[in-house]
Image 1: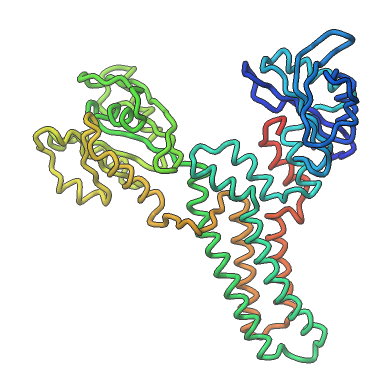
Image 2: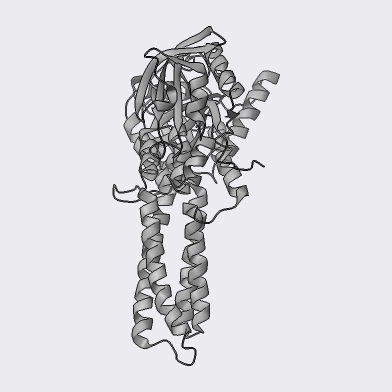
Length: 460
């Protein structure tokens, strides 16, 4: 377990490894400017420790007179910096060798290598952002779609934190009244006070329900879904994958069994991050390779959040189709009737009796693909497509804390209605506040910080 020491000055490479136009070595802490001054030779000959905040300076990084790199030095003075400490960013050429040499120099001159996420951790510990905003940083980095990025940016700007603070203030206002009644134990809670508190409880529960409603959509946009395309050989699975990806990813031939192994790709379907898998056709195996391929297809189907089962419109349903339908009957599924450009022979009524979601397409001509995407969104969101004003809670930790707070508010309301001792009501309210404080990081454990920030990359 790491122990925070804000007296340390930390340093790390903040850009991805590999070649690039620019690479950045970031330094943060009380000695950031003095450490930079020991290795940076500015072109204007000024002292690095005299540099003002929000300025950039051209010069060279030197080691015992040897030029290591030609750089631009950015300076951000505390408290107006990412960490609320003095921060120096050395903008080097983007080769990994130059970056490592510059980083090593900062460490030799007194900096310590930063832990994963330590810059953001310091931003939290120094009060620049709360814990919910800190978690939004990693969500921004990992966003897979524009919608997911929009949620994360909203949380980083404090959207969720403002809602939590409003709820917390309402709870504290009720607690003030409750504590006043506790100070006079011989008297029951006046009816006027009780009515006002009950109204406040209902308002808080309504807002908590609204936030938790947004958690359903938020988690989908944050984590995405696992979709598997399955069907008999030669029904058009690979063609469908290609048209969804808008590129030729899978080999398509008239020969049944062309796809021998599962092909996985990531894509964005109307804002939903989707990991989509094109599986080998489910058939009676003719050799060991086909046996392994079919086995893997069935394993992917078991793990899928959603299955797209394909049928060939030009063929009647056979025993292979029926076995596959039986295999996926307990999973969320969309039945897709492909090849509608050919003469139809398939028994559509039988498919409609089994599946609630049926779409007819022609993958080869990209016909009705938008209808399939709409069906997927509708099934994933279960009719809970979010409105623009709905606050989306994308973090599982936040959702659990909100559920616990809601349960305690319900208990407090029941205790007040049942005229139980006011101490019981007050304790439920205090416990609910603790859960809200956990979201914002007003109360936290070292273990919680370790779990959150070890998910970060070094340098952020």
